[in-house]
Length: 400
Image (cartoon, rainbow, N blue to C red; front, side, top):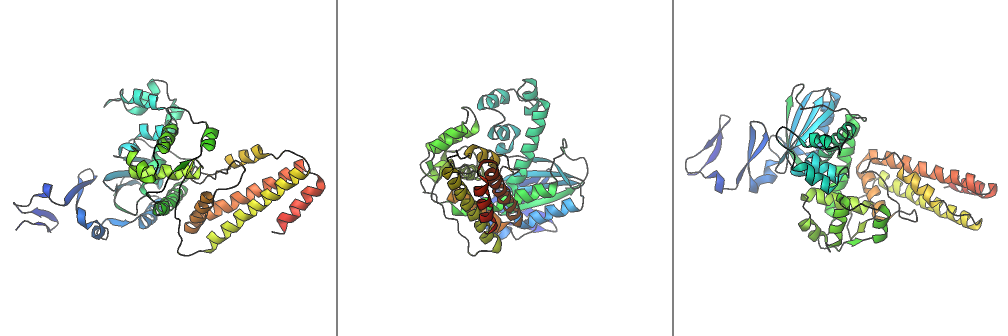
C-alpha cells in the first residue's frame, strides 16, 4: 500500500508512493529544513507544530525583542520564506525569496527609482555585483540613499508577514547571522506594532472587497499628485484606469495578490480611486465610537471656521491647513489624506474607525492627530479673524 509516514522522527515513503504526482508539497523553511504538507489539509496543518496565527506570532516577536535575543526567525508565508534578523532584541535585517520583496522592486514601488533605472540596472546585476552596488556605481543612488532604501526594504518585508492570517516559523539563535546590519531610528517594538496594526487593517480591508465592484478613478485628485511618467504609481494608476473591476485589477497586475490589494488600499486612502466596499463590524467598542465623535468635532470646527472667514470676507487658508495635514508626524500607512475641501471621505473615516477598533495604538495616534489639527484651526482664527470671532470660535470648541 502506498504510504507516507513518520517513524522515530524520520520520513518513511513506501516504494510505490509517488510524491510528485500526489497532493503533497515540499516547502523549504530554511537552509536544510523543509516541511511536507498535504495541499488539501492546510487548515488542519495550521494546528500542528510550527503553525500559529499571525497574532500569536506577533506576541512571539515581541518576546524576542523584550528578551534582547539575537538570531533569525524563518517565516513561511504562503509558498515564500521570509527572514527577520535580530541583534540583542533589535531588528537589524530582513530577507525574502519573493521577487516582489527584492531591493530593486521595493525601491521602484517606493518611488526611489524609475522603471528605466530598474531595467537598466537589473541587467548589470551579477553574482558578484548586487543591485545596490550597481545603483552606487551608476550614480543613481548615493550611499545614504542606498542605506535608506535598504531600511525601507526591511520594513516592507516585516510588514508583509502580517498580511497573512497564519504563518509557519522557526527560530535560530545566534549572533552575526545577517549579511549586514542596519539600525533604525524607531525601536523594534514600535516597528512591530505598526506592522501588526497595518496587517489587521489589511486583512479587514480584504474581507470588504467586492470582486465585481466597479473601480472609479478621480482625475482631479490624480492630477494634484502630479505623478511622473515611469514611476510605479503612475503605471499602477494607468492599470486602475484600464481595470473596470477589482477582479480585473487583480488579474492584470504583475504584483502578487497581497501586494495588489495593498496598493488598492493605498489608492483608496489617497482618494485616487473608489469602489463599493463592505466594511462590517459585528460590534462597536469605546475606541471606534469615540474616534467618530472626534472626527465629527473636526468637521464641525472646520465648517464654523469657514463661515467666520466668509463672513469677514477673508480668503480661507486651505493651503496652510492642507500643508499642516501633510506634515503631521504620521507613518505612511497611518497618514490621513483630506479631500480638496479638507473634508474626509467616507472610506477615510471608515478606515480610521476600523484601525481604532482593532488597535489601541492607532486610537492614541489619531486622537492626538485630531487634537493637533483642531488647535491649529484655532490658531488660524487668532491670526486672521477679528478678536470677537476668534473668541466665539474658542468658546464653541470648549463647549463641544
